[in-house]
Length: 134
Image 1 (cartoon, rainbow, N blue to C red):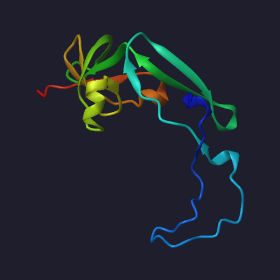
Image 2 (image 1 turned 90 degrees about the horizontal axis):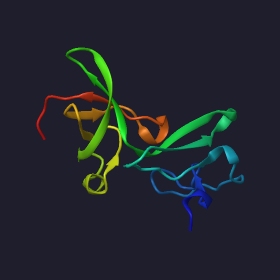
Image 3 (image 1 turned 120 degrees about the vertical axis):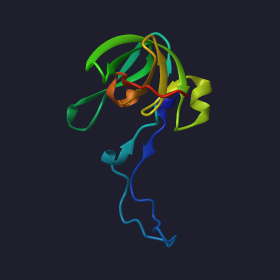
């Protein structure tokens, strides 16, 4: 089954925080629909445009090859190639699978950098060069 045809509903579930039941008095609404998470992997650049509420578009990055890395000491930004995913606080499995998320530490041509953008929602990988050793 493809991920595009599965609906994710973000509406009222019919339960209270305490576990008690709430009688849901209406149907599901289209505005409450969500989508499955898209994990950005390393590879040749691949983007996907998704229409959002209000006719706007969200660019989702499914594969990333380059990152815009800012060097805080010189205050300059450079587009460099991503070589590897070194650390990811979200999940150790993401390091093995080479998945880039916000907060992940990536190995670039300039050195280690921490990702500051959300690639699966912003469509780009922005990072800040770090001095730390992992």
